Length: 415
Image 1 (tube, rainbow, N blue to C red):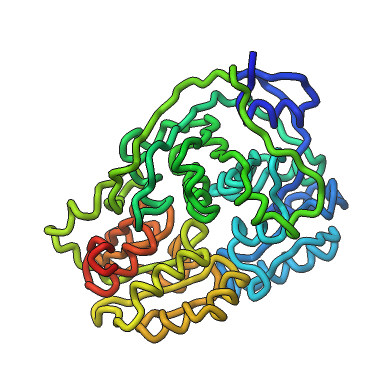
Image 2: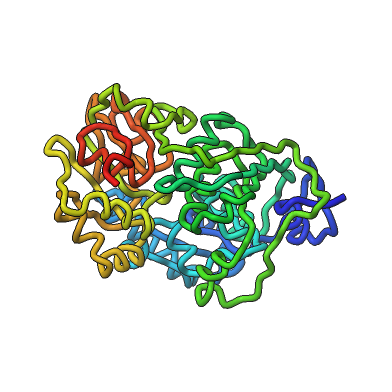
């Protein structure tokens, strides 16, 4: 019997010829992140399994907004020195982990990686099985291995031609609206088809990033020349791209013709509340904040499209627009390209690379009853601040257009 991408990767890392869904196995991992170093120390373990394969970043409360947070960073620095961690990207030198780790060669096709963050499925864009292992992180740090129940696999075929001004965010909001936010529940989701091939790495990355929003264990794409172009000079070790066998068995297969896709938004409360933005135009949904950032949609091309829309225009006087590039590398590229200058001239506040506004920690907290349109991945109640605030999810183009209009609008009106 043939195997899916996830089954092949898990089998290879378990030292087996094959595996099947439902089987429990132990696998060696290729890398991990080290957010539980203190717990490791408390257990009396004085080393990590491989200091070169542990990646660390400071991104959620960066820079620290409180003394408590600052002391956590101080403690983290001590632990990194103690355990000899080689790959540490502090704020100012890094950014958001899912972007920074990729920029620094953590992911490669065919690899298995366990991280300590829910959006770790983002790494699946590189044809790697990447997942959150927060509860087992101490064991992974100490031994470099993790147990798995081999997940069932789901195949999502993205057919047609992606319309101009529609991007990966519109695709995943459409798919989640049609299938619900549980079609990937403890499953490996493979995205294939003409649109998957047409999309840029950044667009695919958005879909893999939001894999956890549909419950996925892994959210995978096949590797191609675009993958190779991104990884060139970032990954120096040997790797082997993985494709599903012709006879691979899938629990379910879904097919979408995206030729008629229009820009999407997700209404507050659930990423699965997706609707075409044109359907809410007459509702006159006024916004207080527009956020362009997060690990989902703050890459160079996201900043580029926002700059194109805002060039020569101004953010509405009733709206505050926050822009946070996904990494310091992206920040520098956008700075040199002039995108940040354009956004600044339009009245946007360009922040450093941080998770702060996305999870409501700082640098963009919403007040009671306020409404935000955001390029991030979650719009749960209270996600970005007050439990009475409202968060709408959208692509960077829709965020930028809405910032100008002061209400949620179709970005095609500004293009």
